[in-house]
Image (cartoon, rainbow, N blue to C red):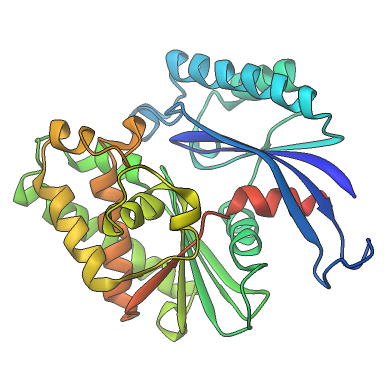
Length: 312
């Protein structure tokens, strides 16, 4: 058994998972695929990707928010006695001209160098984290809707094809939404951008061939929480819930027609997602419309769990 710490730093949030991980059959009664026991899971909205799509650089205030979260996570990692740490950085830090400044700061605080992974590596981790505990081996399409990008990966128990495209909820919001609520022309521009990205994804990933859609990350889990009518965010109720295309459409319509103040009043929407959740929900809906899949299986286990498994 290994006690590991996985950190996933994306465009909108930075997250930590500390877990005990055993490899296949490494302990009496262990499963054929191994076991992951969660000890600590937390998330902080830092908006590292603030303005990157426009400036090509990580903003000083975004870096400081991220480093503050890293200091908090370093304390938790030490308190739990994690033996291995892996820090994975995704879309925003791939794109930024000054990513060396980010790398140095993380190394100073956590003692590990962040791995600025490719979109394909990101997709592989997401697929592993989301599907390892699901029964059966039917063709699954895993979709990870992040802040800067969305990853598509398809496979039967292992990855067969993957593609990352630049349609994350933060990137799309910064590109297109200037009104509150979004104007019809802005929604049309969002749809056109998403459609073009789905065309790119389909060049690599046969997304219409999947039988099951598994959705990951904060946009998807927040849509699920709203669809389920939760009064507060409840991971146990959300994990492995099945949300129909009709429900996703209803939630998306509501988000696109509501004001910032109205969205902020919903207790299941994290304050850091209030201004970007409408774009994230629309990405999910457009994917379901394109594939014709009638429900999404929502997973709270994602790239973070995949990173932890990689340390087993």
